[in-house]
Image (tube, rainbow, N blue to C red; front, side):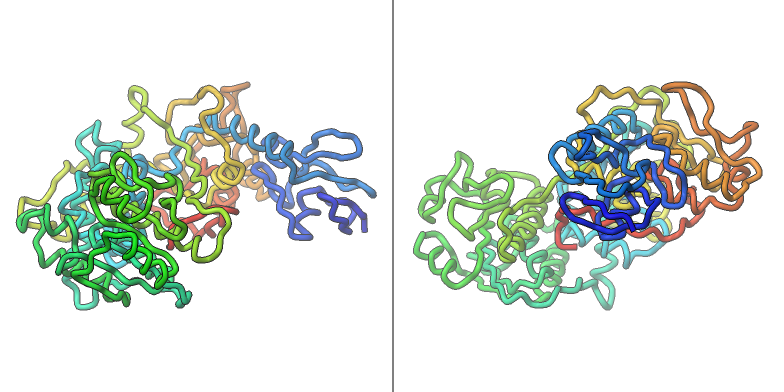
Length: 538
């Protein structure tokens, strides 16, 4: 065995090991993109850079064999900066969206492409689970939301956006009308108690996600019915009361205590809540600075003053959301506030020293150039946009057809992609360097394997895998410099190049440049847990 040190930790490793494999033996993960155990390293991505403490040189961990007495620096600010820069250089050429534009446009950041795919396969039960992971009141929002997600839909510029909001409403209505409406599981009781003051959209959403996290919730409302502005500002035609009541009832069914006709307007009343509960969430709707000050907390020009990153007021354990902050806003923005505040309050109750939603990395293509939309439209259904007439809803076949209009703009490897994972971990900025990107294109439409040249980082892994398997054609690089491109020899098709190891190549690709066509079901991949990433209570 060879004795080396990694970050002052002395370890014994087999001779001949490279630093990546040696570190892995003792549970230390050195990030890699272009390396796969069992294959010769290409040393191309530089994400595995470490420092040889004795020489002071920066070296590639995948291409360096261990030497007796070697001392390696793996986790220092200098190494983090080097790795971050390497990632940012790769991202400057990356042509792909981690998440679809509609996802970014939705304040609740629901996984819209997944919902649409589930509807297209008539998996409505799975679709409502996807929806309620981020939206507590989908049947309500399907009726009153101004549809920012559809404004962000990439198909809008071609022949009209996908009818996301109506499809969400369809799934929620079918669920509510069923004999067994979806009731999400709640985590084991934490022993912590939270008071939610105000039962409008933000208070209801906050209650929903706090209860799912295992906290005991008491919903306090000054009126004699729950709903807040949903009940006072929306008429029966736009929001039928039976729908509103049914959706609120689903939240209460999680095991929520309710106190009606109970107003919290003074510092003394808020003091009493703080004594009774471990945390308080103020969702009291539009309010004046004077009314806020009567509660004994700091006000802003539009309402309650908070830390914008944590929804925390100046009083410990008291948080605020919704129109109590901004005066007036979209209902979907208020429900998103409730979900995000629930995440923060969950951290607070768990004793976290630093509260926050975390860095959420995403690469984006941005504005499409002329002709690029055709690449997205190539494999989509040509059906025109269609929404139900007023007072009606989709039938199953129409909903399926409309969901299939989705262009699938998001990455198929979102949350499984190594480039995304390490970019998020190191806080890489995809816009640090000027973007010099290829046109967006997909090669291999006639094959079961697709190739996106704009995502390829020339790691050679697929070439090596195909070569070892003795594929008849395999893969190779053609061209020079920036124009180097992965290709099938003799102008063959990808299915001809990868007759034995297609799944292995797709699985090894660190950026999802290789993927399976939608018509072919890919093998189940394991979702990567991103170190330090914070997700809402899913």
